[in-house]
Image (cartoon, rainbow, N blue to C red; front, side, top):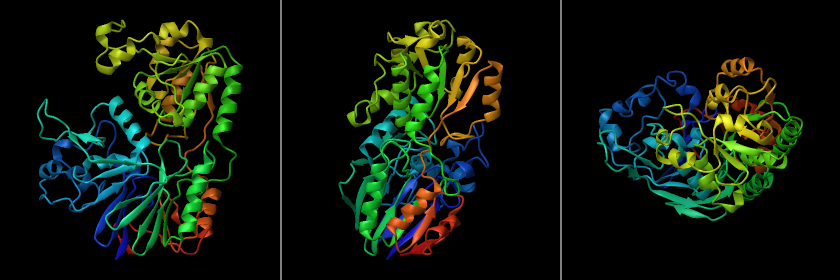
Length: 467
């Protein structure tokens, strides 16, 4: 028997947790954080308690209550009986939190399969972030561990596009797709009942639409019995957005002023990093990056296919923030921050403000306190290059953003290209692949897909569907 059970991504954007069972083999397709359901109960200063194991998450419905899945230490803290892991693997599409974060709670004996670039990106995220109970994907500390105890390493198995591999009775064909993050994949999974296609998150208007187009061609040729397709923007009207348009509009704006430029975007969007790096360089400016974002450049610059500059690139400047003493003393910076802050291309707010026409600052909302030190001139452009009113991984208070911009009399420009396909493209993908049955996921409007196919199942959370 082959079946699908959807434990997340149902009538919501993200939070994908899809269990595929075939002849005794069990794998999860992604195991992500559901932002919308989490925000019903928790926020920055009200979080699930690690001291309670997974009980808070189970009670509030943030993770499915199923056996043979979770870490022993979390089960013990939750007062649950320990059960040997019953899942053969997790198949990860990409490194966005709504697909990956809740791997943090899974048993360490469950192998996690991911693309090589996805692995590099997760290493960068781990290096740049402080310890977080809900973001321990590659390694974790047991909740009862003592200071100095080693972290538990997960079993990570990497793959590359086009190279098939097996998990139990399943054969997996991973294929690159274009998304707002590198190392994103869709899968053709060959089961005993026929191929199952999982899109992950896709778009056709980015820098590499040919990758998504290849995935669609391969998926169509496989003649799938089931298609699991995302629908984030299924109801949106057609637009002429593209990464090229982001580049052109940003370039025109930057070249028209000698003021400092601020650009706010998700630094995991490597297309966007390249865009603003090139815009800065071609206008005689340098791209100013946060200390923590140096970790992304450090890891991802190792892959020549990504064409990402390293943190010591001649056209990159590291913003050196005020810590502790407020005097930029060497002792203020510890660990990796100490290294990055000591580099020759690390500049303070005063040094950047002295030559406003020489820099494009990729600092963003969470560095707005830097405006107090930089003192931008009236009319300084602020390019918001993320979705309105929130980016993919963190809801922003747009009112608060606007208050800062109004206080410093800055001028806001919205210049963005989404990581998700628009409705007309999604309809065409579904028509082209022409699966025996469509299961819409990662969308708040699954019934919209009746415009593309009559062979559709509107899924219910926790219900098993036999293929």
